[in-house]
Image (cartoon, rainbow, N blue to C red; front, side, top):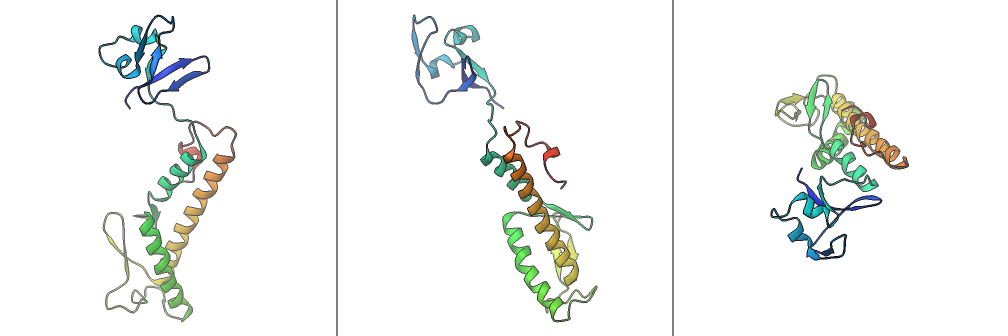
Length: 181
């Protein structure tokens, strides 16, 4: 990560944006931020203006927790030993296909190892993350869809728990706060 300009204050580092004109701490001179952070200035010269170059510090917010939740939800799921994608469009496809699997099961079709429950000419398959074609009968697909749904729900609840912490922990992206993949 690149170093960014921060103003050193009594309350800690404050990230600076734009190109404000800054006073030297002794009040003897002024300079624009972009000049102060240029490669021509030394660390000591920057310090005279209270400027330090540091990695940006993210303050954990509920929005950042939601971003992490979504990253995890959309990062895939392992089901029956295979890894499947769970991007937003994948989840929509899973939900839509579940409707057909449930209809097949309700109508007495979709027996175990019946891969033609969908009415097509080819066996029903779902594509794994590695592009393997995985045959699924209706009940297996319904179980796969349920696993996907519960995984989403578990991540939503984990995010809610993290957002309710006061303060939100700085390491909220650590796996210990989230359900296993």
